[in-house]
Image (cartoon, rainbow, N blue to C red; front, side, top):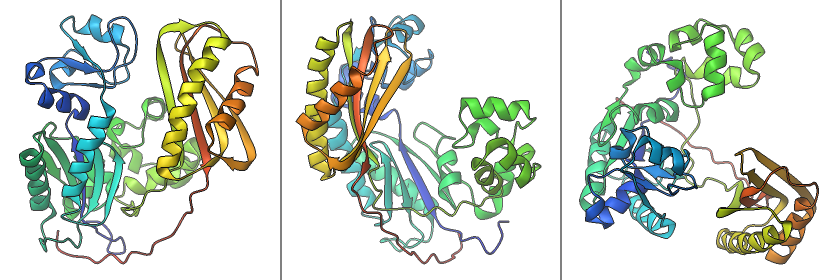
Length: 361
């Protein structure tokens, strides 16, 4: 049982199943039941999402289109339609707000909901999650999975357990055992590099992690050590923030043919800067730090940044800065992707005090 001093909230993490691919299959019946990859192509590009039929062949997001084709010769490449995905995501979020105002979207296809106190007056977070998933399916036509528990960390992990179209509840008295038995690679926030380091230190499961002292974890993992020490004990007090603050705004483009001339790159960056300007205006923000992202033909990546003494959002000024960054040093290889991001934004951070009450789960 979790210590009484730790607030037990009722958190649902909703994660859409293969969201981009599911939307494409919903809109085009000819794609249903077939292995599809959203984004990329058999010649180049990177896969943004894959249907479950494609995942059986090892096709995943972030792999190259060439690798996707090699793993699954029958793969069907579909051009992304982000405006459509945003439209569907907005419809899904409207459903969330029918249940609670404490909704924290993580991306277009996932969000946290705090239903400790909810608009339906239903004390069961498990039943609410079932109802939300059913509403999404009936109103929109695609499936979602969910994780339900006392905090965001455990709920996030639980939502992956019974995918697709399923859910898992980890009750308060089950949390510690659940985390102790969990493979360390499944801990949210533990990536591949950290997993390998933990393996080298003899940490393979939650119970191994729990056996390590705070001093040991901070020595080996720095500030993250405190996080690992707490979460394996079921302690994660991060609240569901309904107004997540935008920390950066970016735009990028992967090219059909590699670019070798800075002149051609400036032309592409002009278009990217125009897209970025539109996004900045949409979010009504400006930033001081401009970052140029360069991905070379050998897939190595480089970033170059410059921080201004004032906030910028104008396309012409952004382009002037990235042009300076582009010519800062010679290109190592031909370039396959360029991107521009603006950070150090003028968004005001506001603190909210939320009183969480305890109820039977």
